[in-house]
Length: 128
Image 1 (cartoon, one colour):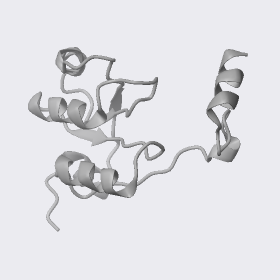
Image 2 (cartoon, one colour):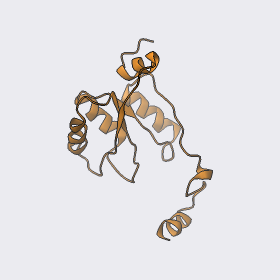
Image 3 (tube, rainbow, N blue to C red):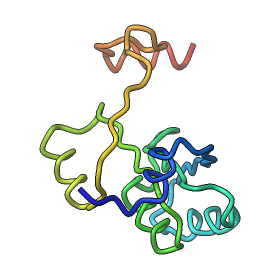
């Protein structure tokens, strides 16, 4: 598979890479994300686009499209906790990004809210 990604080429070459992170806000407009991305200029090689890192927000897929339109290479993050397999596959097809990079995060057993997290228990813990 031919990879046109600048980030992938730099990883393969073993180059030093600088990335930034964009946490889209709770808005239906990509204008806020676009302004934040443009402020970065050409310094980062790519921008990690967070997926609902602080609750409901513009989807990481929509913000990634905004990044591409702004001339910035996005690293699309997709949280799996709220999506089933069909939804994840649909998002990946819609993103049309290749090759996908799969990462894991902190296991639920080590997080503040271990799985399974019952809604009442989560709200009691969060409100404490």
